[in-house]
Image (cartoon, rainbow, N blue to C red; front, top):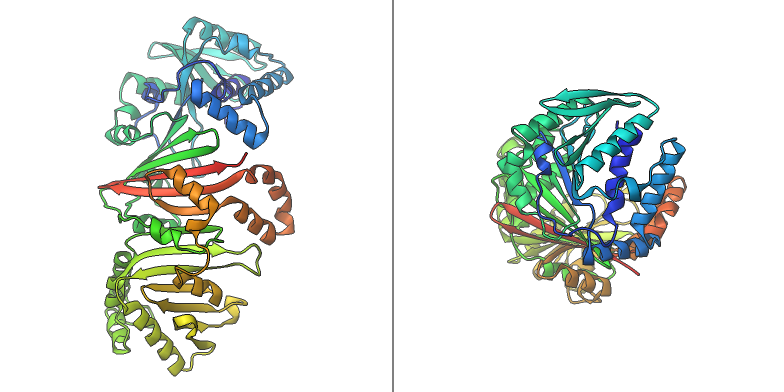
Length: 521
């Protein structure tokens, strides 16, 4: 781990300058810093060190709103200088660092270590004055309590030492810091030969980064999976596949764009040759209950369900049903899985409540025909005819369906109901009825925070929403005593989150998402 005074100074200097107003250019165009990243690097981060104008003002505004800090850059510099003094190596940031600090910095994580964590970073910082930067390196090395030795590789002189054997040096007009000599040498070799910057996957991904960002993060999703022996959470794998993403081939880039009262994160991902489901689900999302603390929607659910059913039918259920018998067996009982899947269109999920006792929610599906409603009725009849324990019919408020009570489900029953072109599967009857009654009661489209999220996303259709204050109330209602201290520590910042809105869209094999975090004054 990079722990030496010199390495720490380099990192904190870069962070401190992020909020320093009045210097530099906020243009987030790509630099040549990725040329120091060895080919195949898994994660690369590049950002503006000294934003100016509106970007700088927005960063300071967010710092003041979230943390009550009027000058974030000044605070970090103060902490930096205090830390350096405590270590016996005092530094005056304004005199020793700021005069040569360039516009941008890049941080590379080459791969994964034996524990499956990202390797220590290689940091590249642009310099506007090579001589002053070299003087700074020499001075800090001389003041180090642990000695440094002079090393040379491919014509580049650098220093290695300190308590952790950190490598640091100047390559042309770039300050380079690495965890050890080997990593530093690899960065030099990349700069003089092949690097991440030369790879088509990186070039394509970074080209989709948003303009005017504070920082961009590139991730080789497929590379991460390969180096981790394809270990991926099954639910995450399913979610990616449902979105049309082949994770083994995908890359992604995220751009962070601060505003005066919001933080925007734009993500674009190469789908690995796949085509994601497309469709505007904002109308469906807006019809969900207005008191939902979280809601999301996705298009093309029927197609995804059909693929899952076909796969399950082909493989069968070990010990229960032989291969190629699932669909035919259910069809004989009046349940046609193919017709159900063909009739289903989009899906949405909402959650509501402010305590464990009031927590509820539903999965809502839209249908192009009455096939789903017929199926719900048939399943309910089948379960009752077979005298399945806890099954009762639901016929209130013009809906048809059934509920199942079981000790493992807790206080509330699992309810499945259908009405018109909607089907809801819910925990508790009230949530189920709300799920199919799109014109009953206040909806999200009437929720003030939801309206703000929709407006902030602009032309990007909203597909997910979180009500910040409502989510915090729930957390306070269900959190254990052991976790209360952690929540208390985070509460001042969580209280500032008014909403989170996420919008998605696709264009061929490129998926894009925009996340907006609204910050309350």
